[in-house]
Structure formats: structure tokens, C-alpha cells
Image (cartoon, rainbow, N blue to C red; front, side, top):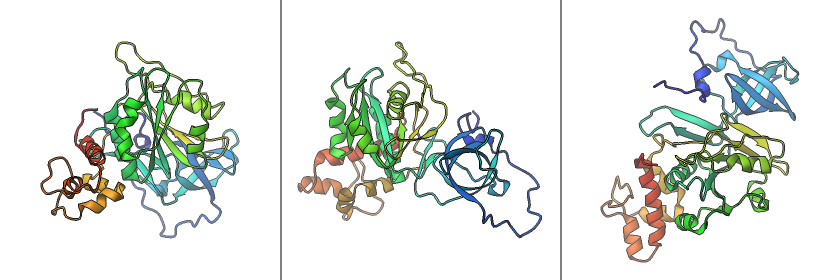
Length: 327
């Protein structure tokens, strides 16, 4: 299998030979202007500069440094945005957050999906297609690892009772919104207001329908669910950042069938739950805090009534999802 597929921007960064600079004096780029990358297409970066879109390429001094949607960059050259114009990205500001995944659990190559996001919106349908809790668990792990606030967005509530799914995540304190076709999206808009939110979910869950309702005129293609396999057909093929009319941004991503977590260290997951982390003081060195871990402080806390067993069980389910490829 190739190291990258057609959706990975790294596949368009060819290694270059004989690129040693001819001089040690590098340009200062004092006249560079600030921009934000809103989409990437085959080595061309669409950036928002002073309210208008500018097409740019990555400058050679950046080398193999990746540029992804959400990156805050500095550009030089033609930043008018006119047809045929082309600017150059000469620097990438330090990222505040990075959402990444691997294609599979044994894949050592990390794919950076979005930079500088604040919230991960996990879109899951209640039916047509059926919800996939294992994939939701893995997305939650990725959100906690990246320092993003998770939000579970449940769609198609007109087809099934949402309580069955919500009860699984309530012990973790995961915030949620429930929607259905033609429903009022006021609560969703309030959750997204003035924040940079990334939408993830497998194909067919209604993610593109939600984006079209939140951003009129975005015209994201809507797919259908295969009646035999129960899986949706991927319609979005690129990551796209869109401005919300009332403030904030949403980043629409292609439907995912897997969410590899090879980059996540299981021991760090506990720090996303400060109340549980405080209970691990008595744990022996190297404790994984997982099910069956000997002398784990979490078991002691549950036995003494200092925390709820359901919350510890839910945390351990997330921890186990990191180890299992069954999703």
C-alpha cells in the first residue's frame, strides 16, 4: 500500500535535491501579510487574507514542513486574489492545537487533519446508518489528546430514540446536541458561536446536510446510505474551512471509516479527566489505569465511594478503544 493516499497533502510534497541555499542571508519577509489556510488542493493552498481568498503555494525554504487547513501563515507575492494570481507561503505560525490521526493503529505516519481548532464535533446518526460507538470513542480520545473540547452531535433523532446512545457518554460528561432533518439548529449554532470547530463522522451521518444548513450557499454534496452495507458514500473529498454567518468557523472533513490512534500514549489520556487523575496517586509505577490493572487507585476510589463506577468504566472503555482495532 502507498504511504499516502490522494487525500493526504503530503503526497504532493516531493523531496527536492540540491536545495542548499546559495547564501546564509535569508529574506526577512517584513512585508509578508497574515492569512489563514481554508482548504488544500494538490499543493495549492487557498488562504483567507483580509476577507478575500488568495491562492498560494508553499515556498521552498519551508521544505517538508506541512501546511494544513487552519494554519495561520504569512504570505508574500500577489495577494490580490485575482484570477491567475499566486502568492507564496513563507512561514507558518506556531500551532495552538493539532488534531491528528493515523490511518490504522499500526501505521507510524501521523496525518495532521486541522490546526488551531478549539472544538471537535463528532457527528453520529441514530439510524441509517447505525451509530458506531467504537469510532465515537476513538474520536473522543483524539480530541482529548489534542486538547480540543468534544461535542457529540446526534443526528436523525426522528428515526430512533437518542437516549440509548447518549446514556453511554453521559458518565464522561461529554456535551451533546440532538438534531433531526428540518429541526431548529439554534442550540447547535450557540455551541459553535465564535469557535473553530472540526466536524468528523463516518459517511452518511448527515454531516454535509448539517454544514449546508449552518452555512447557506456552501453546497456540500450530500450522499446516501447503501441499503445493503449500511454505510454511507463519501461525498466530501477535502477538508474545507467555512465561516459561520454569526461568527466562528467550522471545518468540514471527509467521511472517515477509521480513526487510528497509534500516536496517542494511553498514559496521557487520564489527564483529560482531572477528577480521575487525582485518584491515581496511590497507583504503582507504570500503572495503565485500565481494566484489571493491579492495585489501581481508580478501583480503590470506586470501592470507597469517592467516584462513580460508571465514570471509571466509561474512561476505561475509551482507554480500551485505543488498544482495539475493532471499530
